[in-house]
Image (cartoon, rainbow, N blue to C red):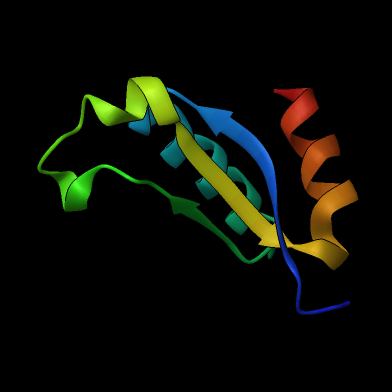
Length: 70
């Protein structure tokens, strides 16, 4: 479905996730980071659960290609 959201990458460092997300956004891909770190109160949870980079399913292939180049 076109509105489905999928994970294209997982990072254990929020900075790396932000860089990758910005890269996709610069190519007009709607992307966001999804974290489960209690709203930033427990950033150590990023090391166990990761920071997930999410995009629309229609953009998945292009997003993965762009991330591989880096």
